[in-house]
Image (cartoon, rainbow, N blue to C red; front, side, top):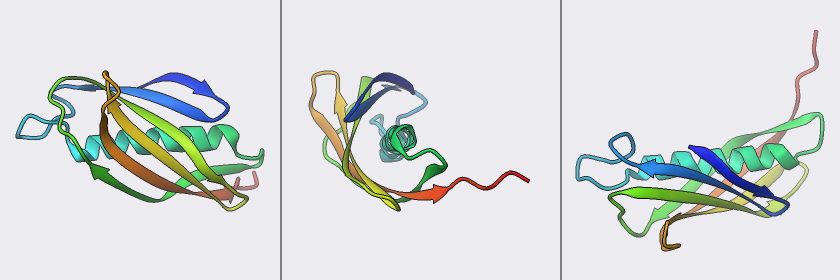
Length: 117
């Protein structure tokens, strides 16, 4: 996975669809889509959280809508809610032709960084 772009209201990551990310039937594994989504949302959340805090995944849910056998998928993370204790992110996983592969929503918990000893 690699970061493609970062802006004020979205983060885009790219992932190959190949022997590492497909399931036995030759299509992108839903777990790989979820890993892409969680990586994009977690990174985005940690980039915008207040200093002294960090974000961790609390919940993720998704619908896998279209199979893909080759190429790349993009995870496009956009915030729906940015609060003091939680963030909610929408992540669209699309193919290179901008067709929706998976629709995913993730909630992040915002936690205070531990005090150094």
